[in-house]
Length: 468
Image (cartoon, rainbow, N blue to C red; front, side, top):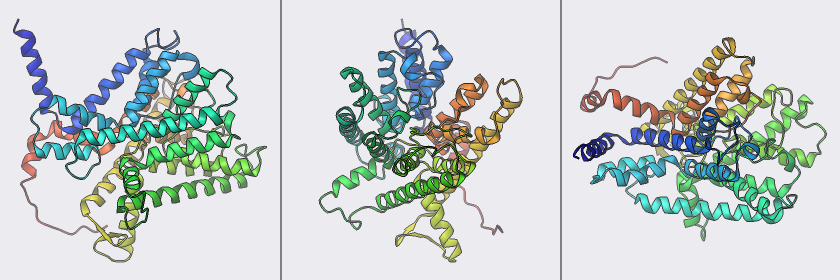
């Protein structure tokens, strides 16, 4: 009789010993596994969806990527689509936020230092209440999703005659757009609505707001009556400016590259359709994954693909529903480069000095992400040359690797044709990309070298110059 209580205590002790990065990884894996078992049941999917297909779909949903090896609208039942939407909400509203919220129940008696550590997982600076923060995130998301769904139902998806089907399509795509997921109920994404300005603008609106991050939307709402840049934080101003510049560069770049290439990307569409299409693709490429134009090596130029890969790799903003290395990481690296060229000792952004810790973190995120994407591409290349039925070009493999790691969901026809080994690489890439490369490495490092970390924190080392 005492064995069960003893096992419970041992489990509680095991959870208490987990650091925040380790707890986040464990929770993410549990959510994916639970979603896999639910989706694979007959009540949620057809007989074509086995355990492997359910695992890939569940991982893509929790990581809000959008890559899929099944047809969501055809092979998932209505219940399965509802479960998928729930997983999009779990992953999009922030696996980090939910993990932190749950950890308050598991780890009892947490001290101030632990609470501060958990706050960093939420991308919060300070000792704000986790419950209050999570409620704010949830309420903001609910309001925007419902608003987007209402507009899509009334003015967007008017071609769907059945009211219930139109309502569900509006809700599902609104959830998917705000969470930067890219999942759609139709196999061609939103290509049927390329000329529908309402659908295009609503999706763009939701994707941008979801990708900006909780801190930015909260800052804008707090200063809504006196919306001046002096009242906004440096983080908010930097995120908005960088996001605007990237969107503009992406739209103009695609318009120029595809117009000059005379390819199939802009074939037989008017200039007004080209303008809304390049704006849509530019916004969607930064981790949303929706598309109104067919993506393939035959339809888009190499220059256009390179531009999309750059935007995908940068991604959304910290605390948002998107992936990538984040806009602020890019801004910090650009500021560090500018300071180096000017011979300045400190990194300055908008008359504010950025700490060396932030710059080092930006370098670590970028370098770690780049190495991980290259490793994914290398492994896909190995699977491409050994044991795979289909052969893919280097550009296709690199594009797919970035799309998975940055949780974008753009596909040039590679994902469904990969074997299980190749799809496993994408599964790992999606999971690592959503959690963040530094958080995952931190979880592994802390598990292996806990005592060494504690000892190194008390050791100082002599300085020496290094020529670079």
